[in-house]
Image (cartoon, rainbow, N blue to C red; front, side, top):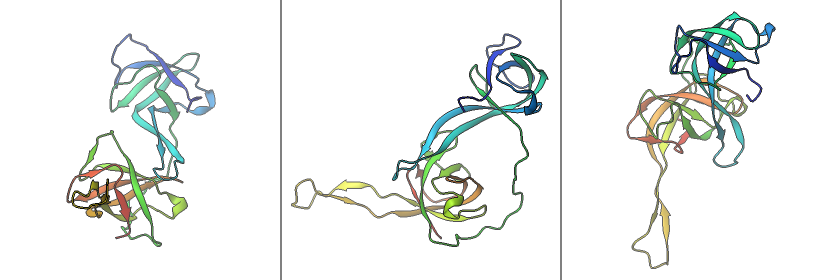
Length: 208
């Protein structure tokens, strides 16, 4: 990510750059093709238990086509989802396997994991939002895998117990269902299909 080509300026001196505008970028190689994704590096995805770095967030901003190669190169933005700034990164567009049709199914083995992030960074998660899971293909998660979501029980003070500073964790409560639609080695992306109560980062996923 640190070595990825980056936006160095707007070609038309616009403060806010979007579809139809031109940008200058440095670091492009001639053999990378002429179509690029523009993205913004985000925070690392970290396993809440093991503290392993599972990957890094890359926020998709749009697509651009190469008009002139050089240092800097000139690109025209063909599609944008939000404004593009100096320092945003570029990645060549490649043909990836996208599953248009798949069958929802339970995991083949017992899997328990955690929602570690939500796309666009909101704190509460609702129906049809996309979440990031700390389980991927190495844990046998595949496209179409369905999980139940359990709202993590709070750790509260036992106000009745005579034990000093006694605390107790409330039970986890079933709060929704999600289906995985994209997998990587250590993380997966899932769509919340049903939410019966507010969901949060840190909630648990288990086999249905």
